[in-house]
Length: 209
Image (cartoon, rainbow, N blue to C red; front, side):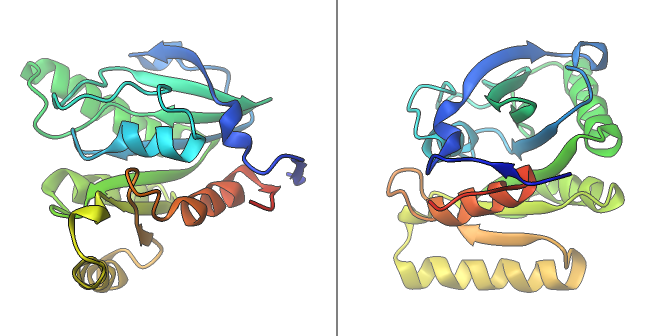
């Protein structure tokens, strides 16, 4: 696919809600490029998307875990979409609903050809939870590139946050060597450019932020 020429410094500001789906048959046509955001409930996924797009109210944020119950599509440009996946983990939903979403998420990661990468959201205070590891395993099985944002990095002093980053990096190197990782804070705008640069590469366009 040829590079897409983008003339503005942050094309993610163009993001606008497109649709929500909760079953495979409702997914948009399989064309273009999608980048998905996944993470444990209440790990800061909505805040990260809002920060990256520089649109404060694009995704609703809530202190209530499991608020995102649908696959939400946001259009950035022609055939370019950000995809907000349902929060996983301890969401207070029935077992059947959890099972439905688990099956749909796995199928989406493994069988969606236009999906070019997954941004995984992990709270820096609780990285690599059981569900995070499951998601990494799915990505690995699908040969899907993953990039981890260790969110809420402002909760620690820089040195302590760096220590956590290095510890998680060591685990990734041993078990998921193709997964990249960074510190991120939506509150302090830490790591924004690094995250956008990763997205740029997946969307296959060249931008000077």
